[in-house]
Image: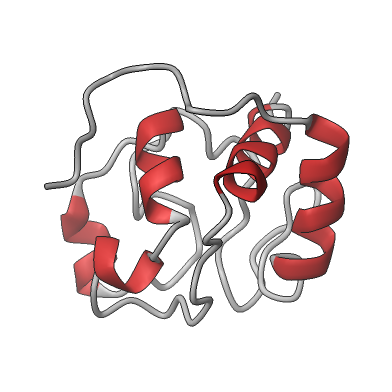
Length: 115
């Protein structure tokens, strides 16, 4: 199922490491700054707490729009392990982060990318 029990993440995320990991692994397809806009993937500015499939001007797959996921820590933590398994049939080609620490770090960084 899509929902772990709402508990703190198993590891503490590091914002600086998360930003570095984001630049290496995610920035090819996503921006995470206010002016960045959409690339191959939608902008991740203000992702935290947003519902899936909602970025203005981005052409989402039906699967993504229909997923109805709210991007909180739990959803992002599970999604980033295996995006294709979490929401099948999307444009996301990234295989995921096996490392809990990498996922927690990227989430910590994404939480700072907001108005």
